[in-house]
Amino acid sequence: MRTPLATLPSPTRRLLITWAVLMGLTLVTMLSAQLGGDARLQALPLWSAGLLLLSTAFKAHQVLMTYLGLRDASAAWRGAFIGLVLFTLLLVASGYLLAQLGG
Amino acid sequence: MAQRHETTQQRPLPNPGWGPLSALPGNPLMWVLILSEMVVFAAFFGLFAWLRIGEREVFDASQQLLDPVAGGINTLVLLTSGLFAALAVQAIGRGDKRRCRQWLAGAFALGVVFCVVKVMEYADKLGAGLMPETNTFFTFYYLLTGFHFAHVLFGLGLIALVAWRISHDNVETAAAFWHMVDLIWILLYPIIYLLR
Image 1 (cartoon, rainbow over the protein chains, first blue to last red):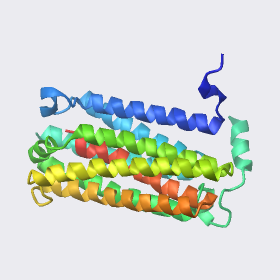
Image 2 (cartoon, each protein chain N blue to C red):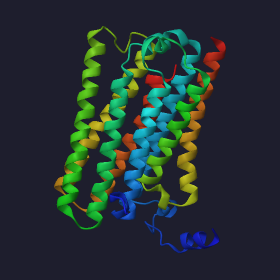
Image 3 (cartoon, each protein chain N blue to C red):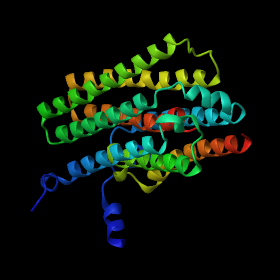
Image 4 (cartoon, rainbow over the protein chains, first blue to last red):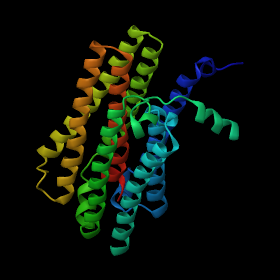
């Protein structure tokens, strides 16, 4: 039996799947940041901070590839944009780690 | 894999005559803007992370005063608004102007929801006496979220304009700007609201 999603044209289906993934990852990000109770007063465990940054990188990748259509661009442009996002998150991760080590 | 590569090679360039930008989909000038905005925000995020090293306690204590759930809700709102903008591009690609306007209206409405949540957040912080000059964290909080907020307002104006003057190029260009606003928020939210 074909699901309603399967009846949609391929580009629309891809958009909806991407949207669902982005929404799910946002919720994962919020959960991994432990927003409830006393946990919010503590520094994040390293795994949680890592998961948060990884899911952010993946979300940015999805927005670039599917929402912005970079999937259809040349490999050089895809690399440039993804590289910039990764470089930004690497800067943030380095600063975060240095701050944790210093504290 | 080799076959796929061959297919990619044979595909005509989306913007012939634009030199290095010819391989990018949509309006090439919008990509210049997107790239420059990403570089500016990357510099701010890097500076924020750098300053946090020396003032970790101030940054962490200040971050406790933000509302991460409101920020998360705004992320979900913007992502859905981005979906509507992308669906508007697909609709105009099929020549369906009516459906395109409907999706644009949805994207616009969710953009307004984002603004309302943000204004409420600003009112709450300012009411609590948390000003841009309170400390370094709040300087960056207002600077980054304010700069992003200005982009949201500009994006809303663009969406309204292209819904009025509807064409494939116009809708695609406005949608690309709107996705860039999405992208920046996706990076901003965890860095300012969550990472501690």
